[in-house]
Length: 266
Image (cartoon, rainbow, N blue to C red; front, side, top):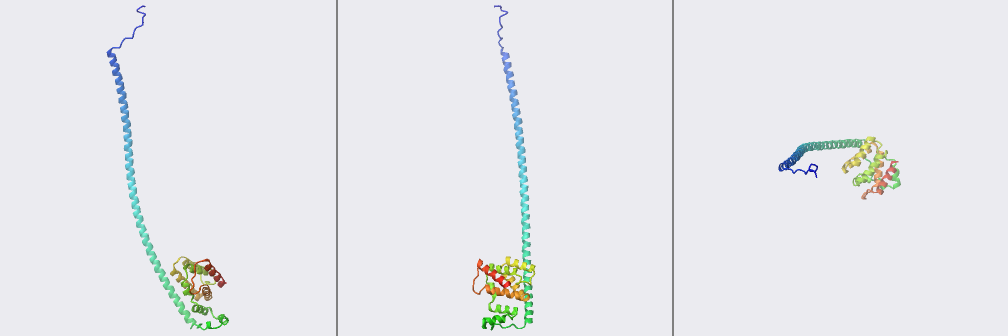
């Protein structure tokens, strides 16, 4: 074979070439490592910046929350002060209302006493009706037709004492009786609609003592202004409520009250 046409064998690399390649490979690895390190460092720096921003936001949130809590405490203290002031004003108002109510009751009692004295002077000596019970019933009823309502009222109060009986009634029964009575014009025709509404409101929502005062005042004025209505009302009370008997707030009591008030008011 011709030496010129024979394929050439690859020439062996020398030791210097190998070292050069290794150095280049190491340099490339170092460069890549440096790049990765720098990239990791930049990423770490970004994360650290995000953490710092989050911490600052958290601190700002804590400060805002603390300020809001402080403002809420201040508002709460202000609300407590205002509530105490309002309660104090309510107490003072209630005291003034109680004083005014007491003055009104005293003045009403004075007016009632004055009217009663005037009525007693005008009516003269009261008729003694103690002997009327001794007569036969037919004769007593016949005589009663000629008596005035004032005299009949005197007789009812002397013989049956309806007001003391009324004072011992159950408060619910008492309210029911006078609520129905106020609805009938014959008993309180002398009162205006506003006065009837006011009395009905007192009887519905007031306590026992106030209810008794209002009832006595209504009856007392009815005796002066509407004697027939007062007589019919007292007669209904005498028929419905008996001395010494207890009356409970049930259907039978309410039905008896309603029926008798309708009968007497017609």
